[in-house]
Image 1 (cartoon, rainbow, N blue to C red):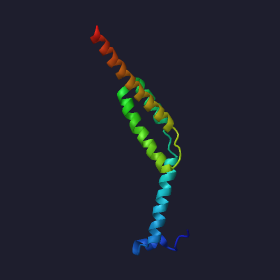
Image 2 (tube, rainbow, N blue to C red):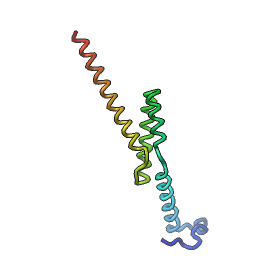
Image 3 (cartoon, rainbow, N blue to C red):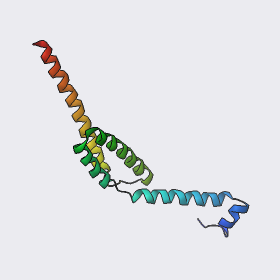
Image 4 (tube, rainbow, N blue to C red):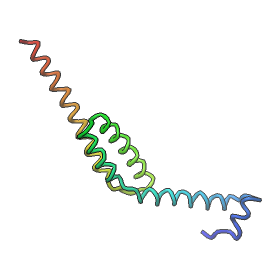
Length: 114
């Protein structure tokens, strides 16, 4: 798609649909290339450290970073490094929480029987 001559100068005086279309296309390409350059591996390591130090802030950070990583994958239309690690940590910790609650309920029920 060829850019009209003096397109950007004309936009200030008489904006044309073709010029605005070029600008929005360039903007979406910039967002896509910026999203493809991001990596969530460092954030995944930070979440792992937070899980060991403080469990609840680690879980909250994991949810936030995972949602951001999925949003970036949607924008980039490609896989972003670290997203799979965040997803694995999130689902494994959700399973641990569910198992912990189930064990606590079973132990409490067994205490009442005696």
